[in-house]
Structure formats: structure tokens, C-alpha cells
Image (cartoon, rainbow, N blue to C red; front, side, top):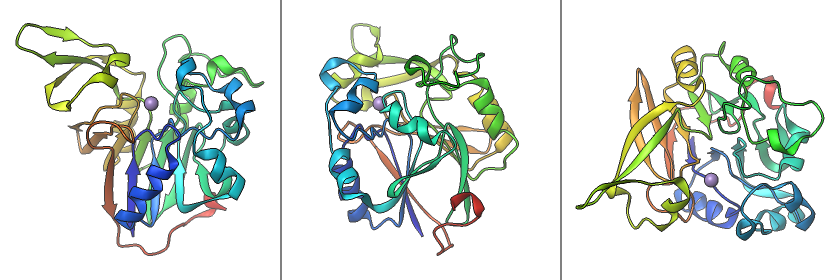
Length: 264
Ligand SMILES: [Mn+2]
């Protein structure tokens, strides 16, 4: 089986399935900022800058009630959180489209995949997420989310957030300028970027030590960066229609798509 792991989609589902079909993948894993916005009403629950608050490709797939390739995604910080909150434990939104949940695992092609939705904030990390829907805390993972995954032995871990907060340095002739995430959109090539570590993003690195996945895939920063932590290959993917590598393909021996009770 061929599995494609994709970076931030940001509602560009047609681009996602165009690439996936060209690559002949049997299933898709995705690292968040998928954007399941069904119609204008969902935009109220979609935290982002006003210029990005638009209905995109998902609306059309939602009307059809399906996506063409089995797709398993986690949540990022830009999502229609009113849609995802009904599936905190994971579930199938429309045919072939599965949300892995706030912190959950699935069996896919003989592999165990763990997923952690959201990004890190020290304001939200130590607190329990409110039971009733509260938009402000939906974008963040909590320490309890991580605890739910740490007992597992994983083959692949998906996180939206990077394991550490990077300092992204442009290597220019004059000086090295610290660039904030927002300005990365204007970059013309990833080669000019150098990454340094500022601090860990919650316990993701400890989670990697405990669950020992072969791969950790993450997104969020819209740049491609890879490194090794212990026995884990960490692959941070760029976004769809962005600059740099935005998907990765792995092959497994297994031909059955789904395994285990958790997929039913
Ligand atoms: Mn994003």
C-alpha cells in the first residue's frame, strides 16, 4: 500500500486529491489545518485572519458527501472547530474522510498511527479543555491529550505543531534576521532559511521518546525541515501550494487498508 502524508491543506482539497491521484496513493494522512468549512456559517468558528476567512474546496466535497481517497487528518489551529468538536474522539465526517480526534490512534495498512491535534500554548497546556464548546481553547493541545498517546507504540506520529519552537534565520549577506511566521509567505526559497531551536513545544519530544515512531510528521510553519530524534525521522512539511516539499510517500507491505476495531 502507498500512503501519502501531506502538509497543511488550508482548504485546497482539489490540489490535495490531484497530487494524491497522480502519485497513486491508496490512503492519505494529513497533519492539520485541513479546513472542513461547509458553508459561510462555519466561518464564525474558524479562527484566522479576515483575509483567509473564506469558504474553500471542502464545501463542494461536503455536498457530494465524500472524498475520493481515504483520508485521515488531525486538527491544526485553523479549522472549522464547530465541525470538529463533534468528533473529539475521532470519526468519519463524510465518506472516506476521517478525523483522528484531539488525540487518537488508528490502524492503517498494518501501521499504528497516532495523531495529536492543535498547537502549543503555555496558557492552555496545563488546563483541561472546557467540556462545553469554547472556541478559544480549541486550537491548542493539552498535557492530557499527550498523556492519552504516551502508552502506545507507534509507527507514525502526526502532530500539527513542531516538536520545538524554531527560530528561523534568513542567511543574508548583511545580517541574520529573525523572521516571524507571518512573513514566511513571502519567501522565495527554503534554502535561505536556517533553523535554530528556541524551546520545546510542550511534551512532543518526550512523546516521541515514549512512543518511538519511525516517523513524526508535522506542519504548521509552512516550511520543509527534516531531522532525526533518536530513532525517529522528523519530517516537517510545507503547505499545499506553498514553497518546498509538502508531501511524503511511504510504502507498506500490507494490502488491507484498515485494521482494528478503532476504525469501525
Ligand atoms: Mn497552517
